[in-house]
Length: 146
Ligand code: FEO
Image (cartoon, rainbow, N blue to C red):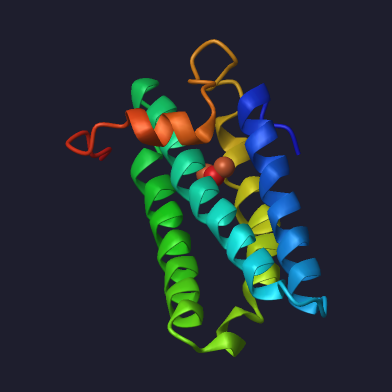
């Protein structure tokens, strides 16, 4: 499922691992299960924000023609995940049930079909390879990508 950019491939692999972690934590019966789930949710939120920022910034710099549609897909997915997580944190624990499948499906629905279209446009040379947390911290909130 390579898009030909090492750091983005690593992000995508991390996404797959977060989905597996969520599934594992949701099904385990340990005392600190809620804390484990919260950790996975924090990782997922950071992934979504940081990875989308990395991709969108690089695509914008490359004048990618389908940027607007790509961003819309990111925004829709982020909104759905955010709503689920918020409902869960507000006490609706069952809302989390479909989340790991939703994340896993994102791999097939987006990474394998939409992200692969920019293969050759983005390269190891024109994508910021900072860790996600640093990318987020260094992002200028006034620099909205359009
Ligand atoms: Fe890798 Fe467009 O998300």
